[in-house]
Every structure is written in C-alpha cells, then in structure tokens.
Image (cartoon, rainbow, N blue to C red; front, side):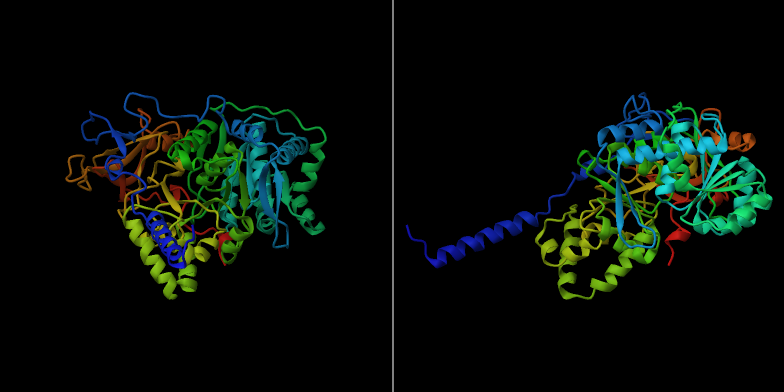
Length: 558
C-alpha cells in the first residue's frame, strides 16, 4: 500500500504533539498530601515543651537510626565497605600540581596509600595507635587530607581539622588546647605554621603535602624542636609493610572539630565514630530510593575536612563505593572543575551556589530562547515537577545544564539558600536539591528538606532519622509551645549524632546537654503544621559554635 506525503506529514505531526504532551506533562513528582505531614509527632508532650518530632520513618517508641548496616559501625568500617563494593573502581580524582587536568585512583590503590601513610606516620612519630591522640590536619580538602584522615580512623588517632589558613592566633590556641604532637600541613600553610611554632611547643613532627621543602624551613622547624617530613615520602616508606588496622570502636573519638572562621576560638566539639556514622545514616536515609548513592556516583564537594557535613557526605559516597573529586580550590574554576570531572552529586555552600546562579544568568539570561524555556520550566516546577526530559531541556537549556558537567542529578547544600537560586537549579538545570540544617554539636545535621518540596517556604525540613527535636519555652522571648499557629521556643536535639561533649570543658558540656540527653542549640525555632522546622534566630551568641556551613572558605575565594 502506498503512503502519500500528506499522510507521512500528519503522522509526524501527531507523533510530535504526543511527544510534547508526554515530555511536558505536569504531574507532580510526589503527591502533595505526602508533603502535608513530613514528621512523626509524639502524642504527648512535657510541660513547657512542644511535642517531640521525628522522621516519618522513625515513629515514636522505635529506636532512632544509628548505622546503615550492622557491620558498618565506625568510619573505618565505612571505608572497608566501599573497598569491598568497588575495589578496582575509581575512588579519588584530583588535579595534578600546576596542571589543569585530573587524575584518578582506584579503591585498591588508595587503600594501600592509607595503610602506607598510617604505618609511616606511626614509625616517625612513635605514637601508639588507638590512644585517642589528637593529630592536626592543617590542609585544604585534598587527596592528602583525605588519606591522612582515613589513616587516623584506621589506626585510632583523633583528627583535628583546621581549615583557616590566615590566623596564627587560632592555630596556636587549638594546638595548645589539644597538645597535638604531629600535624599534616599544606605547603601554602607551612609558613604560618613555622611562624607559630615558638608558641606551639607540643608539635614535634610536621608532615608537609608538598614536592619541595627548603632547608631554611627545616632549620626553622628544628630550632623549635620539630622535624619536617614530606607526606609522599612517609607514605612510600610505610607502604612496603603496612601495619594491620587497629580497629576503632564506635565510642572512640574520631574528630575534635573547631570552627576556625571566627575571630576567637570556639569550643572543640568531640565527635565519636558513632556520632558521625549516625549523621551519615540519617542523611542517606532521607534520600529517596532512586537517589541513593551507588558506585556509579561521583561527588564534587566544596565542604572541606573542617566541615562536619564534608565528613558525612564523603563517608556516604565512600560507603557506596563511589568516587570523590577534590576541586581545584578557586571560585573562578568551579564550573571548569565540574566540566572536567562530570560529577553526579554536587555539594556546595549557599554562597557558591548563588555565585554559580549569578554567573550563568549573566551568560544566558538575556537570550530569548532561554527566557521562553525557563518560563516554561518554572511552570512545570510550580506544578511540582523537576525534569531534564521536557522539550525545553532540548531546545533552550541543554548548555546551561552542561556547565555543571551535564550529569549532576542532586545538589546538596545548607540553609539558607536564596529561593531564586533554588528555582534556577531545579528549573533551568533540572536538578533536585536537598538542603540540610545542622550544628557541629549534632555532627552537622538535624533536619533535611524533602527533595520533592519545591515550595518557597523558609522551613529547614523535617528531622532526619538519627535524631528527634522539640522546642522549649522561652518566657523572656515570649515563645511558647502554645503559640498559634505554630509552637515556638528553643530548638533541642537528641540522638546518636549528638556530640560526646566539648573538649576538656565539662562545665560547658553539662550546660549544653541536659540530663535527658537533649542538646540545647541556643537557637529559636517554630514547628510548622506539616512537621517541618523553621529557624527564628539565635537565643544567645553561638556564632562561634555553629556548624561551618555557609561562608566561602579561603581556598574557594578568587
């Protein structure tokens, strides 16, 4: 049977219309009713308190989540799980020094490096494993800081991350408070450390992540009773006969975390392996099934080893056997880093996300095709849908999405991020966003905003599965649990992610964590009818104690 040209054209036209309808369908990604109640609310509440709120997956009377699997109870177990899941797969990606190209290393190779550095570290320092000895990491987020941190987890030392590279005063205070005998330092931070050594008498061994160390630098260190060793040489020296792991227990201290962005030293937050594994578990448990991390995922994160969120984000990726990108460290290179490494998960601070939005809007925002495509995608977003398969994604938005490498399907950030930026990421780029709220004292997480909640409401999301929250009346502020339409008060948090305490400050610990295990955040909040938390302000000056989340780190400035 012959088919004339008109029939063919009609068939093509009908197919195009059907495709347009299918690709531009506006059914929401989640039923709206599921967003109307995002938490489990206890039926009873104490006097002067709101009801206790939990994740919907953890009803009242059940245990809060602590571990992802029974065999994964420490950060060392997290590494072992990733190694077993993807031993020959890519683990780390980092830039070659003075070259703008990335190289990758497998889990097997990185495992040998961890054992090699840990063994060399023990041989050079003569420090005994699993004695909870504090060791400094005064380096940006890099392959060396990652290797060092994993080695400390493997052999039972305590990581003390320091990511401020400007203030000798803060460095001296942290060193003297922890009495650390050894420190891993970046090349650019070495001069400041050497200037501070006269006031840091406990430091005896300095491991420098550098190709070159001058004789003058070695001489200055020796004047103050310290040795300088190259990180790579120590790693190599221990790699031939690496020591067996000295496995930590969940209750062992993994990290003492300081927020060194403030102008004065904050309290050292003592976090155990159990705390950090619980935080990681709480976060991964809030991911929908289709968005769970796998060995095919790749994380590019701007949260450094000094940010607790950086620790559990990296741990979540390692546990799945995925790969980790260490970015170049310059704000102007953020988009190039993404294009060179094609991450699937992009974790960054609100400020960096807002700068990306500004840069892309400047480049593409004036184009008529972009304006039409973006308006149509905003309409889909208002209807509850984030997608990369509408016709508009192919017509006007493909290049915009490619600027983050083209494969990112999830952005993880902290609160608050500008609504305009969140809209842009979801609509123009077709990427889901999860925003979290946390404190250093809660291992960097308390709540997480539902991935499918695209509203402009200023809430912080509902509790994650590792902790529960409630509000305590504050008569001075006139915030009470009986306030309408929402209870208000000081935010209290309890769960296995809550810190062990403040380092060598028992009185401060007792003031912050009450006899029932509730951590008093010093921040006001309200609990919305749908179970989400909204932040109202600070009850007292806690800026120096708050989890480092929003500010742009020194290494990510221009």
